[in-house]
Length: 183
Image 1 (tube, rainbow, N blue to C red):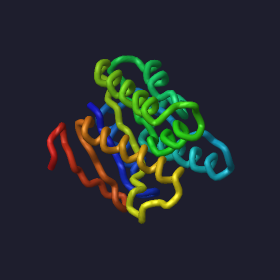
Image 2 (cartoon, rainbow, N blue to C red):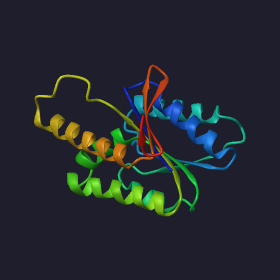
Image 3 (cartoon, helix red, strand yellow):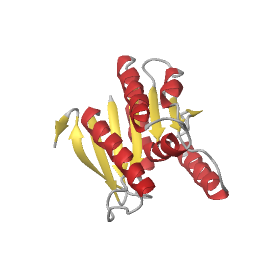
Image 4 (cartoon, rainbow, N blue to C red):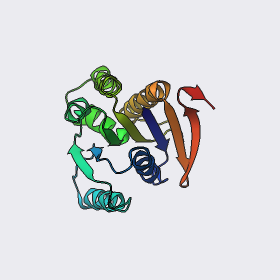
């Protein structure tokens, strides 16, 4: 099962994604595939806030964190078959693929494709979180345009491939697709 959760910044995406994962797997261990690279005090505070929120989902849930700013396919390979994984988030991963690695846009997409294919092959319940940042006027500089184009390409592909798609607005989940069927 692949669930794609998208929405605006600070909309409550991570909370809803975490709760969906916990509801689906009960007290089994949950893997948190973190794509954030902690590079300043604000990011360290955000990571700590997310870790604290995860501990609030009940004492029966044990979170195992895997850090993968770029190599999400390799990190997923470390997870046992049939596990539950929360990948948070594609937005940060995309910036690191484009600006923190030597990968091309196509190579970045291949990482994402391999990761999703591996999750399906090994019956991993995968929840993927990302920010929808395409609500403003189109950017005028080439680097921002490249990033937005890559991220939206990844979003469109994820939405097409996922079994279910949620959009989070002000803490409310809107279901656009459920088990491969558009609603």
